[in-house]
Image (spheres, helix red, strand yellow):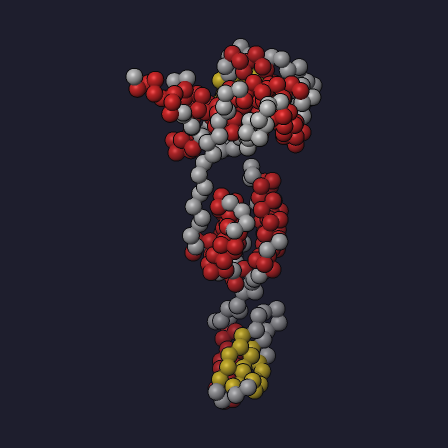
Length: 332
Protein backbone atom coordinates (compact mmCIF):
# COMPACT_ATOMS: atom_id res chain seq x y z
CA UNK A 1 0.00 0.00 0.00
CA UNK A 2 0.99 3.63 -0.46
CA UNK A 3 1.32 6.30 2.19
CA UNK A 4 1.99 10.04 2.00
CA UNK A 5 3.20 12.11 4.93
CA UNK A 6 4.67 15.54 5.61
CA UNK A 7 8.41 15.36 6.27
CA UNK A 8 9.85 18.76 7.12
CA UNK A 9 8.96 21.07 4.27
CA UNK A 10 8.54 18.14 1.85
CA UNK A 11 5.88 15.53 1.20
CA UNK A 12 7.19 11.94 1.28
CA UNK A 13 5.44 9.18 -0.62
CA UNK A 14 6.19 5.55 0.21
CA UNK A 15 5.02 2.35 -1.52
CA UNK A 16 5.30 -0.88 0.45
CA UNK A 17 4.55 -4.46 -0.63
CA UNK A 18 4.79 -7.47 1.66
CA UNK A 19 8.13 -9.24 1.37
CA UNK A 20 9.63 -6.42 -0.67
CA UNK A 21 11.76 -3.39 0.08
CA UNK A 22 9.79 -0.13 0.22
CA UNK A 23 10.13 2.58 -2.43
CA UNK A 24 10.07 6.22 -1.32
CA UNK A 25 10.47 9.68 -2.81
CA UNK A 26 10.01 13.27 -1.60
CA UNK A 27 8.08 16.07 -3.36
CA UNK A 28 7.39 19.75 -2.88
CA UNK A 29 3.60 19.26 -2.78
CA UNK A 30 1.16 16.54 -1.76
CA UNK A 31 -0.49 16.23 -5.17
CA UNK A 32 2.76 15.24 -6.86
CA UNK A 33 3.49 12.76 -4.06
CA UNK A 34 0.08 11.09 -4.50
CA UNK A 35 0.47 10.98 -8.28
CA UNK A 36 3.89 9.30 -7.97
CA UNK A 37 2.63 6.80 -5.40
CA UNK A 38 -0.31 5.75 -7.63
CA UNK A 39 2.05 5.37 -10.61
CA UNK A 40 4.53 3.24 -8.68
CA UNK A 41 1.76 1.03 -7.25
CA UNK A 42 0.45 0.42 -10.75
CA UNK A 43 3.90 -0.48 -12.09
CA UNK A 44 4.59 -2.87 -9.22
CA UNK A 45 1.19 -4.57 -9.61
CA UNK A 46 1.74 -5.01 -13.36
CA UNK A 47 5.25 -6.34 -12.79
CA UNK A 48 6.77 -3.51 -14.80
CA UNK A 49 8.85 -2.35 -11.85
CA UNK A 50 10.90 -5.00 -10.13
CA UNK A 51 11.29 -4.54 -6.37
CA UNK A 52 14.72 -3.47 -5.23
CA UNK A 53 16.79 -6.44 -4.13
CA UNK A 54 17.44 -6.61 -0.41
CA UNK A 55 21.20 -6.75 0.02
CA UNK A 56 22.82 -9.06 2.56
CA UNK A 57 25.62 -8.08 4.89
CA UNK A 58 29.16 -9.17 4.09
CA UNK A 59 29.80 -11.73 6.81
CA UNK A 60 26.86 -14.04 6.01
CA UNK A 61 28.13 -14.14 2.42
CA UNK A 62 31.68 -14.89 3.59
CA UNK A 63 30.33 -17.68 5.82
CA UNK A 64 28.31 -19.12 2.95
CA UNK A 65 31.37 -19.02 0.70
CA UNK A 66 33.49 -20.79 3.32
CA UNK A 67 30.81 -23.45 3.74
CA UNK A 68 30.06 -24.08 0.06
CA UNK A 69 33.18 -23.18 -1.92
CA UNK A 70 36.22 -23.24 0.36
CA UNK A 71 36.12 -27.03 1.04
CA UNK A 72 36.68 -27.62 -2.69
CA UNK A 73 39.94 -25.65 -2.72
CA UNK A 74 43.48 -26.64 -1.78
CA UNK A 75 44.00 -23.52 0.32
CA UNK A 76 41.06 -24.32 2.58
CA UNK A 77 42.80 -23.59 5.87
CA UNK A 78 44.17 -20.27 4.58
CA UNK A 79 40.74 -19.16 3.36
CA UNK A 80 39.13 -20.05 6.67
CA UNK A 81 41.77 -18.02 8.45
CA UNK A 82 41.18 -14.98 6.23
CA UNK A 83 37.43 -15.31 6.67
CA UNK A 84 37.91 -15.09 10.44
CA UNK A 85 40.12 -12.05 9.96
CA UNK A 86 37.32 -10.22 8.15
CA UNK A 87 34.95 -11.11 10.98
CA UNK A 88 36.96 -8.72 13.16
CA UNK A 89 36.67 -5.75 10.79
CA UNK A 90 34.02 -3.08 10.33
CA UNK A 91 33.33 -4.48 6.86
CA UNK A 92 31.79 -7.62 8.36
CA UNK A 93 28.50 -5.96 9.33
CA UNK A 94 28.19 -3.74 6.25
CA UNK A 95 25.64 -4.35 3.48
CA UNK A 96 27.66 -5.57 0.52
CA UNK A 97 26.35 -2.87 -1.83
CA UNK A 98 27.71 -0.27 0.59
CA UNK A 99 31.23 -1.72 0.38
CA UNK A 100 32.53 0.55 -2.36
CA UNK A 101 35.98 0.95 -3.83
CA UNK A 102 36.53 3.88 -1.50
CA UNK A 103 35.61 1.78 1.54
CA UNK A 104 37.96 -1.02 0.48
CA UNK A 105 40.75 1.46 -0.22
CA UNK A 106 40.43 2.78 3.32
CA UNK A 107 40.57 -0.78 4.65
CA UNK A 108 43.65 -1.46 2.50
CA UNK A 109 45.52 1.60 3.74
CA UNK A 110 44.71 0.85 7.38
CA UNK A 111 45.84 -2.78 7.07
CA UNK A 112 49.10 -1.79 5.39
CA UNK A 113 50.05 -0.07 8.63
CA UNK A 114 49.58 -3.38 10.49
CA UNK A 115 50.71 -6.18 8.17
CA UNK A 116 52.83 -6.76 5.07
CA UNK A 117 51.67 -5.83 1.54
CA UNK A 118 51.52 -9.53 0.60
CA UNK A 119 49.15 -10.24 3.49
CA UNK A 120 46.87 -7.40 2.39
CA UNK A 121 46.98 -8.64 -1.22
CA UNK A 122 45.86 -12.09 -0.10
CA UNK A 123 43.06 -10.69 2.04
CA UNK A 124 41.77 -8.52 -0.79
CA UNK A 125 42.03 -11.42 -3.23
CA UNK A 126 39.85 -13.49 -0.91
CA UNK A 127 37.32 -10.67 -0.60
CA UNK A 128 37.29 -10.39 -4.38
CA UNK A 129 36.40 -14.04 -4.95
CA UNK A 130 33.56 -13.72 -2.43
CA UNK A 131 32.12 -10.77 -4.38
CA UNK A 132 32.56 -12.63 -7.66
CA UNK A 133 30.71 -15.62 -6.21
CA UNK A 134 27.87 -13.33 -5.10
CA UNK A 135 27.72 -11.66 -8.49
CA UNK A 136 28.10 -14.67 -10.80
CA UNK A 137 26.68 -17.63 -8.88
CA UNK A 138 24.29 -16.33 -6.26
CA UNK A 139 22.38 -13.77 -8.30
CA UNK A 140 23.18 -10.76 -6.17
CA UNK A 141 23.34 -7.57 -8.22
CA UNK A 142 26.51 -6.13 -6.77
CA UNK A 143 29.77 -4.94 -8.32
CA UNK A 144 33.17 -6.11 -7.17
CA UNK A 145 34.81 -3.15 -5.35
CA UNK A 146 38.24 -4.80 -5.40
CA UNK A 147 38.37 -4.18 -9.15
CA UNK A 148 38.08 -0.45 -8.49
CA UNK A 149 41.21 -0.07 -6.36
CA UNK A 150 44.97 -0.43 -6.64
CA UNK A 151 46.31 -3.60 -5.11
CA UNK A 152 49.42 -3.25 -2.91
CA UNK A 153 52.63 -3.99 -4.75
CA UNK A 154 53.96 -7.48 -4.03
CA UNK A 155 56.79 -7.58 -1.55
CA UNK A 156 60.29 -8.55 -2.54
CA UNK A 157 60.76 -12.33 -2.77
CA UNK A 158 62.72 -13.93 0.05
CA UNK A 159 66.33 -14.66 -0.78
CA UNK A 160 67.31 -16.62 2.32
CA UNK A 161 69.73 -19.43 1.60
CA UNK A 162 71.66 -21.74 3.88
CA UNK A 163 75.04 -20.27 4.75
CA UNK A 164 78.22 -22.20 5.47
CA UNK A 165 77.75 -24.57 8.38
CA UNK A 166 74.01 -23.96 8.74
CA UNK A 167 72.90 -27.17 7.04
CA UNK A 168 75.08 -29.37 9.24
CA UNK A 169 73.90 -27.57 12.37
CA UNK A 170 70.26 -27.84 11.30
CA UNK A 171 70.56 -31.58 10.68
CA UNK A 172 72.26 -31.99 14.06
CA UNK A 173 69.34 -30.13 15.61
CA UNK A 174 66.99 -32.53 13.84
CA UNK A 175 68.77 -35.49 15.38
CA UNK A 176 68.54 -33.90 18.82
CA UNK A 177 64.88 -32.88 18.46
CA UNK A 178 63.54 -36.29 19.42
CA UNK A 179 61.65 -36.63 16.11
CA UNK A 180 63.40 -39.60 14.47
CA UNK A 181 61.94 -38.79 11.04
CA UNK A 182 62.87 -35.09 10.97
CA UNK A 183 66.38 -35.39 9.50
CA UNK A 184 65.00 -37.36 6.54
CA UNK A 185 62.20 -34.80 6.14
CA UNK A 186 64.67 -31.90 5.97
CA UNK A 187 67.11 -33.71 3.66
CA UNK A 188 64.28 -34.43 1.21
CA UNK A 189 63.24 -30.78 1.31
CA UNK A 190 66.78 -29.66 0.47
CA UNK A 191 67.35 -32.31 -2.19
CA UNK A 192 63.97 -32.21 -3.99
CA UNK A 193 62.43 -28.78 -3.36
CA UNK A 194 59.15 -30.42 -2.40
CA UNK A 195 56.69 -28.26 -0.47
CA UNK A 196 55.98 -28.99 3.18
CA UNK A 197 52.49 -30.35 2.45
CA UNK A 198 53.77 -32.50 -0.40
CA UNK A 199 56.43 -34.07 1.84
CA UNK A 200 54.02 -34.64 4.70
CA UNK A 201 51.61 -36.46 2.39
CA UNK A 202 54.08 -38.84 0.66
CA UNK A 203 53.00 -42.49 0.79
CA UNK A 204 55.19 -45.54 0.33
CA UNK A 205 53.10 -46.72 -2.60
CA UNK A 206 54.21 -43.61 -4.51
CA UNK A 207 57.91 -44.12 -3.71
CA UNK A 208 59.74 -46.08 -6.39
CA UNK A 209 63.10 -47.16 -5.00
CA UNK A 210 64.25 -48.81 -8.24
CA UNK A 211 63.44 -45.80 -10.44
CA UNK A 212 64.49 -43.37 -7.68
CA UNK A 213 61.34 -41.27 -7.86
CA UNK A 214 58.43 -40.02 -5.76
CA UNK A 215 55.08 -39.58 -7.48
CA UNK A 216 52.93 -36.69 -6.23
CA UNK A 217 49.32 -37.20 -7.40
CA UNK A 218 48.02 -34.01 -5.79
CA UNK A 219 50.05 -30.80 -5.76
CA UNK A 220 49.41 -27.13 -5.05
CA UNK A 221 49.07 -26.16 -8.72
CA UNK A 222 46.69 -29.05 -9.42
CA UNK A 223 49.06 -31.02 -11.68
CA UNK A 224 50.64 -34.30 -10.56
CA UNK A 225 54.39 -34.64 -10.95
CA UNK A 226 57.14 -37.18 -10.49
CA UNK A 227 60.12 -36.01 -8.45
CA UNK A 228 63.53 -37.60 -9.14
CA UNK A 229 65.65 -38.52 -6.13
CA UNK A 230 69.34 -37.89 -5.66
CA UNK A 231 71.47 -40.58 -4.06
CA UNK A 232 71.41 -38.63 -0.81
CA UNK A 233 67.60 -38.33 -0.88
CA UNK A 234 67.20 -42.04 -1.68
CA UNK A 235 69.48 -43.06 1.19
CA UNK A 236 67.53 -40.81 3.57
CA UNK A 237 64.24 -42.43 2.58
CA UNK A 238 65.61 -45.91 3.13
CA UNK A 239 66.30 -45.07 6.77
CA UNK A 240 62.56 -44.69 7.38
CA UNK A 241 60.66 -47.73 8.69
CA UNK A 242 57.68 -49.00 6.71
CA UNK A 243 54.36 -48.21 8.35
CA UNK A 244 50.97 -49.91 8.39
CA UNK A 245 49.33 -46.60 7.56
CA UNK A 246 51.30 -46.38 4.34
CA UNK A 247 52.66 -42.86 4.83
CA UNK A 248 56.37 -42.13 4.66
CA UNK A 249 56.06 -39.76 7.64
CA UNK A 250 53.45 -40.79 10.21
CA UNK A 251 53.53 -37.55 12.21
CA UNK A 252 50.82 -34.97 11.59
CA UNK A 253 51.69 -31.70 9.88
CA UNK A 254 51.40 -29.69 13.08
CA UNK A 255 53.76 -32.04 14.91
CA UNK A 256 56.32 -31.87 12.09
CA UNK A 257 56.25 -28.06 12.14
CA UNK A 258 56.72 -28.02 15.91
CA UNK A 259 59.60 -30.49 15.69
CA UNK A 260 61.28 -28.34 13.01
CA UNK A 261 61.09 -25.25 15.23
CA UNK A 262 62.60 -27.22 18.12
CA UNK A 263 65.44 -28.42 15.86
CA UNK A 264 66.00 -24.87 14.66
CA UNK A 265 66.31 -23.55 18.21
CA UNK A 266 68.70 -26.33 19.16
CA UNK A 267 70.83 -25.57 16.11
CA UNK A 268 70.84 -21.84 16.89
CA UNK A 269 71.74 -22.45 20.51
CA UNK A 270 74.65 -24.68 19.58
CA UNK A 271 76.54 -21.77 18.02
CA UNK A 272 78.49 -19.01 19.83
CA UNK A 273 76.70 -16.22 17.94
CA UNK A 274 73.23 -17.74 18.05
CA UNK A 275 71.47 -14.48 17.12
CA UNK A 276 72.93 -14.54 13.61
CA UNK A 277 73.23 -18.27 12.96
CA UNK A 278 70.17 -19.68 11.13
CA UNK A 279 68.48 -16.33 11.82
CA UNK A 280 64.97 -15.95 10.36
CA UNK A 281 65.15 -19.27 8.54
CA UNK A 282 61.77 -20.70 7.55
CA UNK A 283 61.06 -24.19 6.34
CA UNK A 284 59.92 -22.85 2.96
CA UNK A 285 63.39 -21.33 2.50
CA UNK A 286 64.65 -24.89 2.00
CA UNK A 287 62.61 -24.97 -1.23
CA UNK A 288 64.46 -21.84 -2.40
CA UNK A 289 67.73 -23.55 -1.49
CA UNK A 290 66.81 -26.71 -3.37
CA UNK A 291 65.75 -24.92 -6.57
CA UNK A 292 68.93 -22.85 -6.61
CA UNK A 293 71.10 -25.93 -6.07
CA UNK A 294 69.41 -27.64 -9.05
CA UNK A 295 70.47 -24.73 -11.25
CA UNK A 296 73.97 -24.85 -9.76
CA UNK A 297 74.15 -28.52 -10.76
CA UNK A 298 73.59 -27.49 -14.37
CA UNK A 299 69.91 -28.33 -14.89
CA UNK A 300 68.08 -26.07 -17.34
CA UNK A 301 64.87 -24.17 -16.41
CA UNK A 302 62.57 -26.80 -17.94
CA UNK A 303 64.28 -29.58 -16.00
CA UNK A 304 64.21 -27.61 -12.74
CA UNK A 305 60.52 -26.80 -13.28
CA UNK A 306 59.74 -30.50 -13.73
CA UNK A 307 61.35 -31.22 -10.36
CA UNK A 308 59.96 -28.26 -8.42
CA UNK A 309 56.55 -28.03 -10.03
CA UNK A 310 56.87 -24.38 -11.12
CA UNK A 311 54.90 -23.81 -14.31
CA UNK A 312 56.31 -20.43 -15.31
CA UNK A 313 59.80 -19.02 -15.59
CA UNK A 314 58.71 -15.97 -13.59
CA UNK A 315 57.80 -18.09 -10.57
CA UNK A 316 60.96 -20.15 -10.97
CA UNK A 317 63.04 -16.97 -10.88
CA UNK A 318 61.44 -15.96 -7.56
CA UNK A 319 62.79 -19.20 -6.07
CA UNK A 320 66.27 -19.00 -7.59
CA UNK A 321 69.01 -17.15 -5.70
CA UNK A 322 72.37 -17.78 -7.32
CA UNK A 323 75.34 -16.29 -5.50
CA UNK A 324 77.30 -13.78 -7.54
CA UNK A 325 80.63 -15.08 -6.26
CA UNK A 326 79.78 -18.54 -7.61
CA UNK A 327 79.02 -17.13 -11.04
CA UNK A 328 82.47 -15.57 -11.26
CA UNK A 329 84.10 -18.93 -12.03
CA UNK A 330 81.80 -19.33 -15.04
CA UNK A 331 82.97 -16.01 -16.45
CA UNK A 332 86.68 -16.94 -16.46
